[in-house]
Image (cartoon, rainbow, N blue to C red):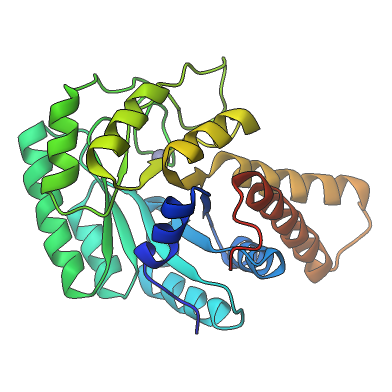
Length: 283
Ligand SMILES: [Zn+2]
């Protein structure tokens, strides 16, 4: 069994300054394709799941699928709940044995978010799970959560206080990246992530990874982004995989060939990110 906690995966990545990819799996095909990729690349991996996906399958089905698939490989993997604004959903996942959750209180006031995040940290502690925190909304809507506006920046002292005093393990800083497809090249606030890491020595999480250049990834990972979220590119690979296969083989009706082909596409995509993020060979 190679299911480990989020810190067991992110601590070495943060210390050695490589990034661990966190892909938003949506089903068995994507989950197995990603886990196989990690095994083939000898890379650690974070499987993360959106709230919509939890509501679609149920937290137990996802956990059981993950446990079974992860038990077949020798690399460390962990199961994480992505952007969750609802403490009740976070609680059901934690009770089902998930390893970590992102409590997204970015719509709340600073004070409310601080208190609620602290409560989730306590709840997670009971099952040995970890919490990612978020204070300022990352721009872009992802699976129905978020807004087209990035939240207003807070004084950095407030961010540092939130990171250090809520008990979170890692933090999603607002640094100019966005969910979805980039319409223009984003202006990244490298100074902000640097200041946060210098002040807290805690690992950061890069949201909106799909579409950034390799140079941006390298700089942010070097500054302390130890978890790099990839959702949009997985969705694209998944949908394009079906489209391409069916267009190229209109007479083919073997479902296992079709989903096998899509799974291979997902595996190849994941392996390319392990190379870029420097996690290849680290497990
Ligand atoms: Zn995100």
